[in-house]
Structure formats: C-alpha cells, structure tokens
Image 1 (cartoon, rainbow, N blue to C red):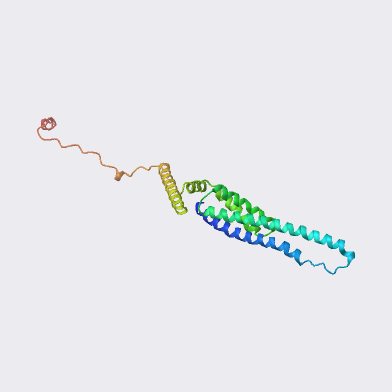
Image 2: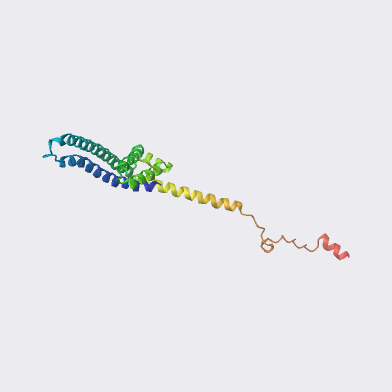
Length: 205
C-alpha cells in the first residue's frame, strides 16, 4: 500500500487545483449575475416586483460567494494534503484533507472523482504499513528512503513467508522407505584364520 500513497498525493493535488478554480468561478459568477440585472426604465407600478427580484439575486449572489469560498478552501486543503502525502508527512492532516472532498459533492462538480479519491485514500491511509511509513517520515526520513526501507521490509516478509510455507510442506509430506537396493549391505563376517579352534574341529571331523 505504501507506493499508492504517492499516487493519491498527486491526485489530491490535481483534484484540489480543479476545486480551487471552480470555487473562484463561483465567487465571481454571483456578483457578475447581479451586475447584469438592469431594471432601469421599468414602470413605477413594477417597483415592488423589481425590489423582490433584486433581493432574490442578492441572496443568490451571497450563496454563490459562500459556496465558492468553501469549495476553494476544500481545494486548498487537498493541495496541501497531497503535498504532505507525497512527502510522507502528517498522516492526520492528510486524512483530514481527504474528508474535505465531501464539500465539492454538493456542487455536482468533480463528485465522482472527489468521492472516489476520498474512499480510496482513506482505505490506504488506515493501513498499518502506511502508518509506519508516515512515522518514518515524522522521524526525518525522505520519501525515497521510506520507499526503499518499506520495499526491503516487504521483501523480507514475503521471503520468510515462503520459507515457512516450504518448511511446512516438507514436514507434512509423508516419508517413504528407500528401496532395498538403496539400503546399505550388512557388514561381512571376517574370514577365520587357519589354526584357530574352528579349523581344528573341522580337521577332527
């Protein structure tokens, strides 16, 4: 999961930049719509309706400004969180920045990408090896050093797992008896030298 942190950080920066641009657009669209409303030359009897329309457009303009500011702040949080994720710094801040991806969903802009990035990022951030990688980053290790150390750790873990599996297979495998031809021959009896008691008994017979 550790290599995915860099990918998530880059996507957070990209998504955050898009949210900032969209937030600035909303901030400028509201007052711009209000400035285009020209009610000059309207008859006097239409003044109450004109005042109601102006109030409505003022409210809409304020809503656009507030919503645009919130979306822009969420985008800035994503950019800062993405930079922190790439450097393996401040895991808590990265998780907080990921939760800010809920804000753009209310504008129907980048809804799928924001939700997908938030869910994927939270799944990765709550992994044990990712938490250990961020603890190394808090200790002063660079991103390249963290990736190298975590890759070596994963290699040792998989190597130990393979060794344990092979050892378990050897223990579970039934032992077969070697064929007779492979068994060592019994030791031969040494020849009896002449003049021994056995030789004298044979001569008496």
